[in-house]
Length: 305
Image 1 (cartoon, rainbow, N blue to C red):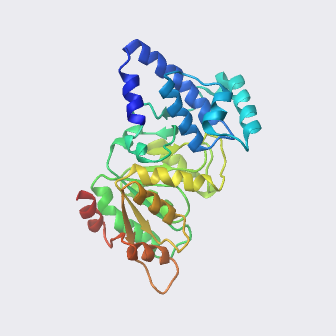
Image 2 (cartoon, one colour; image 1 turned 90 degrees about the vertical axis):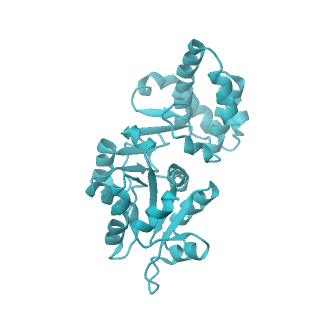
Image 3 (cartoon, rainbow, N blue to C red; image 1 turned 90 degrees about the horizontal axis):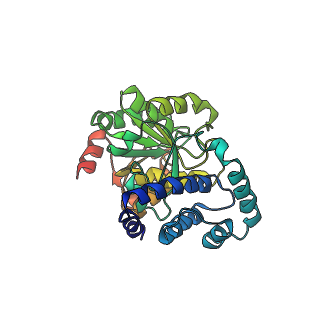
């Protein structure tokens, strides 16, 4: 459906299209800042906006389209404040909307793509080959070495490493890319001006300066539990495949793996020590059909098929 709406838009003459895109960009930025509306609701509003070929909708239209019931007052107050102060923060951050040519088209495979991505760093990395790497926050003593050994051949083959800048495997994956003079993308569950966990603030700053930092949340938004599973869908969708390392039975990494499978991505899983709990989730993935990998060469072989 979204492809059809875009075709309608791009059939219009250049001047009308340029004006429309400029105006709708501001509306999408407001929508990204709005509170009391879900990601699903925001995506429904974008589709309705394009269907109507208009550049803005009223708060009442948004409430109806997004089916906002429980948080209606919260949304209305948020929308009022956003419109009142819009000029102050309109140029305060870098972002791309879902209508921007730089927006990664693979995100449209998601049921609910992010309507907008705030970013810091090099957007050209979104056009490179990518591998997502996820895993546990509490890891074994060998985890860092395993990640480094596994990813070095992949990084040398010019794959960009995508992860979530969390403790543990995420951190090791980003560091492996940086130390091997490769490139990495961090998709975070806070705004790009907030570091979570705090001990990763220097890593996050390095990624935002010399690599690429992405978030669908406004720059100063702090951590909220529900946002991390939501950001996982972006990690899963960006890459050809997702590699799971040291995931326990109830690890959030298994959510990312499931999201990757749902949109047709390959899931890789690295076996671990059967005498510990660190890789019980990883082993379950292998039993369920994930590709078992024990080297970077294994990953490259599967990625090239």
